[in-house]
Length: 427
Image (tube, rainbow, N blue to C red):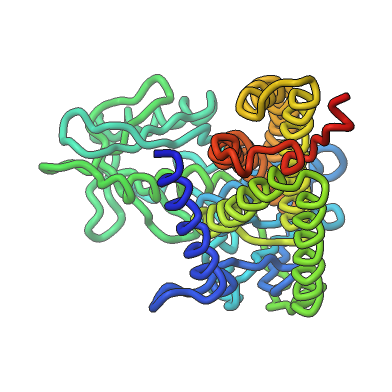
């Protein structure tokens, strides 16, 4: 059974590399599917200026909050790995790798992203800074999904007063086609929702439902909640500069990086074969699968490949090799101590497992911290590093072990010489 599985796996790896490099039919090769970052392929950047008279610490706080909100907003709109930075005292710079149209980029992040809740008589109830959160939940009455809103203390008081006025009938509509009991949710002067009020909302928590015979669809509810949550900018922004930029490092540098990476991988393969012989051969097969897994996970996640991301991949390749080296060293020690090849393989994997798991978990923790606290390229590095570590654990522990077990069961292959444990060393 193991032999059949190994043969099938080998065929999958070969076919996977063929598809990766050449593509099949309408399925494009990976070079056409991977998105490149601003430092490699260019993109769009937008610079926006805060329209406020705040200074000092107050301005610094406003800009920090604005930076966080815009980054969250761009992420929620599906734009991978944005780079949002503060320039000077009152400007925000947003870089969108891979984007080609400046106007589309501006529309994606919103020129001002000002969110307002407005009554039918044109009174502004509250703005986005008073929205604490917005998320989707099950609509128990209508089926489907609803949007749950949470307001700050100030927003809760304003919303309570507005809903009280509506329920009491003291609001007269000043807008054509808008009922007097509606509250319009407006983002950048565009109405994104117009729910009607059915009761007073006293506690700062409200639910928007689609009404009628069914609730919102999941995608519709998710998009609306993202717009409300992402529109909570504490200050108005004015676009001051927008440009489509070329790569800062260039595709030539990317090609050189790929060539250097290939040379490094070939040297690693040669070193593993020279040092560990048949065990190195098993490790090389596992490494081929490892590289496929990392690359295609990046494609499926819609990730953007940047130079820091490439660094993360290279570092994780090194850690994948380290895992195999630890295992092989343990196996060789067991053989030198007089155990049979079969027993040495089993014991070596068991002895190496704790060391491998400990080292990889600590690195994953560091990657999680970098991803949570970092932004832009730092998060790209952390993401590729974590993907690589998880893939390396799988390939080293499962795939390498599968091939070594098959080799250990073969009398012709299971020799001290093939396992780089000579008789002289055994003495």
